[in-house]
Image 1 (cartoon, rainbow, N blue to C red):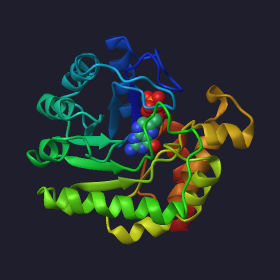
Image 2 (tube, helix red, strand yellow):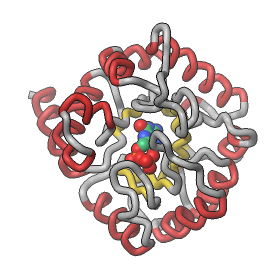
Image 3 (cartoon, rainbow, N blue to C red):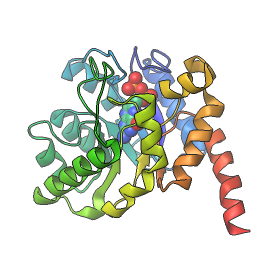
Image 4 (spheres, helix red, strand yellow):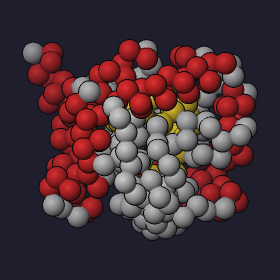
Length: 257
Ligand code: HH2
């Protein structure tokens, strides 16, 4: 899953693709590099991010989704807002990626009334404050229980299990130790019976481990992506498609050999 952030403030690529032409060119580049899904976002959820208005989010996302109607791969929209979900689906998106796991009032219904795929992500707290001393007992058990509850809520709303993926939300209200524990035990989420998405790309825990700024975390991101797959991830949310695919190709060749 290749990331296209149409935002001025995303943590790793903020401002680079705010211009519609630049966003479309980047989207087409990621498709050409072999992305299987594109994930388009119009609001940064990085720690400390301020919310944008619904109209602004839509103005960023909708034209790009429309321009990609003819794309050869599914288009996902990363949003927490029911209206943005509905408009994005109308414009041609076939997946919603929600960092609030459809908790916003009306979100379950917005997804249920279509046949799109949905990624339910765990986060603790809001982006503005979530990295201020997050605490868990057993982080994996807590994340898993939350995702199980959100799968059940989605199913009760009429979204069948075959449409659902889950994501532990690396970096969303988690310390580096929490993120590493989630990675080490990622396969425990497999028993929920739906595909697992992992988003480590360029995140700050990788900066803590390597001492590298956000622009120099490619190798660390690839290591985390490969480890995620080894621990059961089915979908990798990444900024760097070519490099991640090459690393995966080596891993897959070894498995086949
Ligand atoms: N991470 C980010 C945003 N959305 N969605 C899922 N399912 N999983 C993730 O790990 C995830 C996500 C943050 O990354 P990015 O989009 O690059 O940054 P920003 O939120 O600053 O736009």
